[in-house]
Image (cartoon, rainbow, N blue to C red; front, side, top):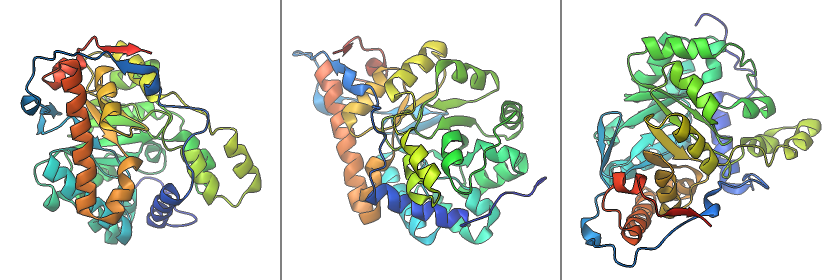
Length: 349
């Protein structure tokens, strides 16, 4: 690495374990901000002219086939416990044919002994796997070589860079130099050798920012909008700084809701491969995301509790989301995912 990476305070792996605990035990959802999906409803089609059992959920993403247009969003890894979570999620994703994102692989790049917590390809040989790193690390010593190492560790099909500026501000050991990142993202997109996408972590990406990322070479964009987990709230619980804990409350309602983020990105970049994530709780939410322009719908914290419990429970959660999505498609008369993306039956309430 060309510069020393900031690893002060708890190790990256320890921090990820703490994040999982807080997401399961504390109230970390945003306050006063929603996904925006509640503003939309589907106009029922009483005569869908479809056989429910023949509805086709298959799709493709980045050239890989999927049994459903669904993604396990990047969540965790970097410790023994979070490694088990990744394995259970990978088994479930393989069984159901979903794509899977991993949590930040930074911990494994920095510490070789943590690499195993991201090595899930043997449990999910057939699905797209997306490795993940914080974009800001490009200003803290990570370059193309380190990003390639992250992809190799995960045996991934693509890399997603996450943008988490507000989280880094409130994180006790946060990296807050986001200056001049776009040229570094552009270089990485050009040189890495696998598709590079960009995601938020729960505050959304607007249309203008999406255009800048696309012009820099981003292969896909993940909205990761507001309405689900607020990482300023998560970091509030980790902080011992009374001022920052109090300040975090002022940002509990920050962000662009997932629905508005999707609408803006799709309007600006109608052909961009797009993932709709951020606060999705059901297959109905997934259907709304797809009808608003997403190619895949991503689930995060809604799956975490099940994955902590067992692989079987995780797979059951995925199966339920698929059933709900398929039922929406039946209810509006959409026999394929592309027909759902093009439906005129999603309306403002």
